[in-house]
Image 1 (tube, rainbow, N blue to C red):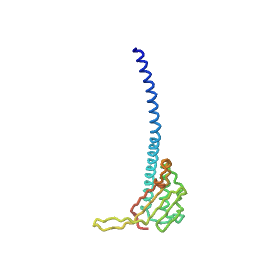
Image 2 (image 1 turned 135 degrees about the horizontal axis):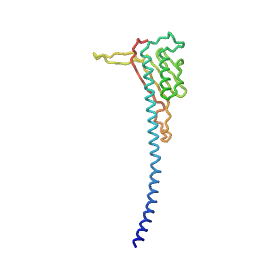
Image 3 (image 1 turned 180 degrees about the horizontal axis):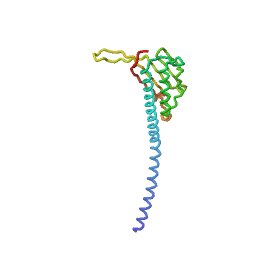
Length: 189
């Protein structure tokens, strides 16, 4: 009798084991797409966050160059002032060193310009705007408003979201931008 009972218990365990394995496989097949979407979203947002940091740092480098030098054209061979050309070159170099090819930004040929503002664009949708005529309102120690000449650098880069394809969402931005504003250290020109 004990041999029959042992054999019956063993058969029940085997049948139960197959059922448990099937349930585990079903659970995995239901949970795996959600987990994969979660991992893809984390990677997507992480790479976009890293791109935003690169854009901010490149913009800060450009602003540092522009605010610390006067806008004179003594040695430049184009209508774009030398400090603006140097700033665009610094952005291109910084982004290249960070692994992003921004060589489409040509320091000598802005897509548009005014007296104190230059915009450089790429075919991929990237844009770099340097506005030397920005004004920052500060408060003096006496409480009065002080208007400080400044430079504003706005750098936008297109983003291809992988997660948006799965979510069918258009709420994610197509361009990530960084804006840096610094007070001019030299005269307003």
